[in-house]
Each structure stands twice: as structure tokens, then as C-alpha cells.
Length: 244
Ligand code: HEC
Ligand code: HEC
Image (tube, rainbow, N blue to C red; front, top):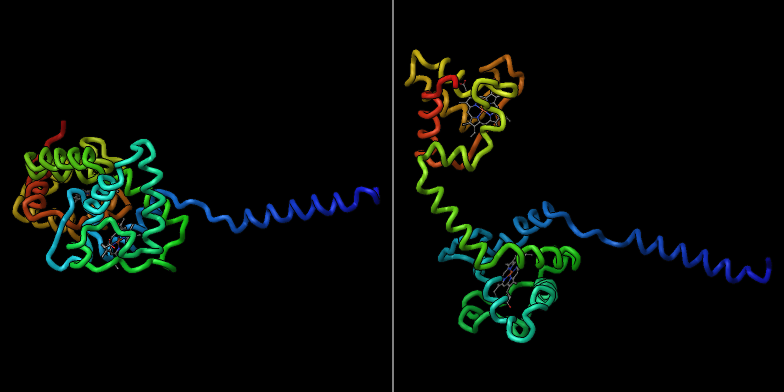
């Protein structure tokens, strides 16, 4: 037994070491955490939309523009290795940016200045996950699809735009409202006074609603960001619903 003691100690130490390392190992962030990082950190300077939005006082080009430009400039040697190369570059750049490393063209670099280091605001593991996410999210095909979808939505009537982009139908199911009154029931409630109904419905959507339908116990949250046309469109549409 004594003979083996050093070996035993060695093994125990080894095990200890491994588990110690495991504790320090930082897990890769989930897609939701990556999205939160993009919004909290990157969106301070880069617009995240696709199609991208630009403005006169922007602090940096939109992330779509930056990503597509980088992919294009990096492509040269081995196209199949592009994703890995992109992730290596971007995860390093956000923590150690420099004029020398930047692929940004000289005129833009002069306009925006070099990106400040995000050291302390993002860990290397997080930076790799963010780099992978923007590589996958921002590309020309996805952009074309996003623009096609935007054009398709723009041609729909305003009420349908709301139903296709919001979750109203999750709860408001025609004729069998278990989570919320059906839109037909709401129409019936306001059938006698449509002008008042219109005002009440618009208010319920923009401010949320509680207590108007005691049968359902749960309140409804407020919906922000609908255009006036969409708000009026969906409200008038609800008033026209009949039991199917
Ligand atoms: C404080 C402002 C600021 C923040 C925050 C910021 N950036 Fe930047 N970023 C810039 C500016 C300015 C540039 C353009 C100049 C340059 O290339 O350094 C840039 C450029 C880049 C580039 C292009 C580099 C190149 O060589 O073309 C990438 C990629 C990038 N940013 C990713 C990110 C990511 C990912 C985040 C969030 C984790 C982020 N940035 C947060 C300001 C910022
Ligand atoms: C999570 C479930 C849920 C979703 C999603 C939801 N609602 Fe509701 N909604 C409710 C509930 C519950 C009520 C009843 C609340 C109350 O008692 O005041 C309600 C009430 C309403 C009312 C009636 C207000 C009144 O004065 O009687 C309207 C109109 C309405 N919702 C429209 C919408 C629209 C439009 C959307 C989508 C943009 C939507 N709701 C999404 C649950 C939901």
C-alpha cells in the first residue's frame, strides 16, 4: 500500500485539480443571454436592426454593415474556414481593438475613430458567442428574406399586420376564449356603442386591461410600438368580429 501512496496522492490531487478547473470554467451564454449582451453592450454604438438603420449621429456603423463587410474582406483565402476565422477575429477585436487590426476603411475609421475596448464589459467566452451569433444572423440572404418579409407585411391591411406580428391570438381565440374573451365577444360587448367601444379597445391595447372581464381573472399587458394606423385598424377589426 505504502508503495502506492505517492501514486494515490498524485491521482487525488489530479482529481481535485480537474474539479477545481471545472468550477472556474465559464459556460457559454444561452441565445437569450447573447441577445441581451448585444442589446446591452453592442447597441450602445451599433444599430442592430436588419435592414439596418443609420443616423447622422451614430457612434459606429450598424452591426449588419460591419458584419457583411468583414465577411467580404476576410473571404479571400479559405471560404470554408471563414466562420471560425471571423469568430477568432471579432472576439479578439472587441477586447483588443486597434487601428492596425481594423478592416474598416480609412475614411470610416477617421469618421468613427477606433472602437474602444470592451474589456471588463464582456468576457472572452461571451465575446466568442456574440461573434458567432452575428456571423449567423447578419448575412445578405437573411437580409433579403427580412426585406421580403417587410414588404409582404407592408402590403397587408393594418389589422392583419398586428395579428401577424403580435401574439393576440394566443389568448383571444374566436368563440372559445379560455384565456381571454374572444374578439367576437368583445365586439358584442361594444355593439351598442361603437365609438365608445373603439376608444375603450384602443386604450386596452395601449395601456393593458384588468377587471373589464372578471371571468378571466388575469390582466392583459400593454402593447407598445403599434403605429396609429395599426392601432385603429386592429380596433375597428375587433369591433366587426362575429361568432364563427
Ligand atoms: C463605444 C462604442 C462601441 C461599442 C459599445 C461597440 N462597438 Fe464595435 N465598433 C465601434 C466603432 C466606432 C467601430 C468602427 C471602427 C473600428 O473598426 O474600430 C466598431 C467596429 C466594430 C467591428 C468591425 C471591426 C473591423 O475591423 O471592421 C466589429 C466586428 C464590432 N465593432 C463588433 C462589436 C460588438 C460585437 C460589440 C458588442 C459586444 C461592439 N462592437 C460594441 C464602436 C463600438
Ligand atoms: C396573454 C393573453 C393575452 C394576449 C396575448 C392578448 N390579450 Fe387581450 N385580453 C386578455 C385578457 C385576459 C383580457 C381581459 C382583461 C380584463 O379583464 O380586463 C383581454 C382583453 C382585451 C380587450 C378587451 C378590452 C375591453 O375593454 O373589454 C381587447 C380589445 C384586447 N384584449 C385586445 C388584444 C389585442 C389587440 C392583443 C394583441 C395585440 C391582445 N389583446 C393580446 C389577454 C390577452
